[in-house]
Length: 115
Image (cartoon, rainbow, N blue to C red; front, top):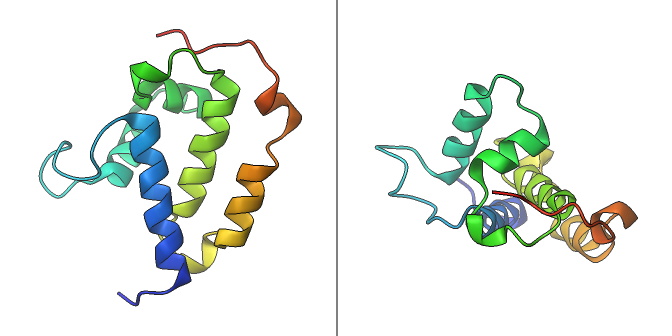
């Protein structure tokens, strides 16, 4: 594996997933399964795998006071960062822009996660 900017983006995505899920990136999901594989497996196991359903299935309960739309937004950024193919991942500049300029609805909502 070649280490470059896109591998740094992947690593950043893993850190975001750690924060959202509240689990270590490896060792908690079974043999050979990491946090990214576990999220993808969880998505496949859901009968209706919407973004909200996936987030609610994996989110750390300690995030229950945060707006669901904001957590989904962060989750989607994380998942863009951990795409399997490096060229499909955003650049860090794009990630910073997404984090700095969230959609209006992601910052102004009262729909909290209820776990």
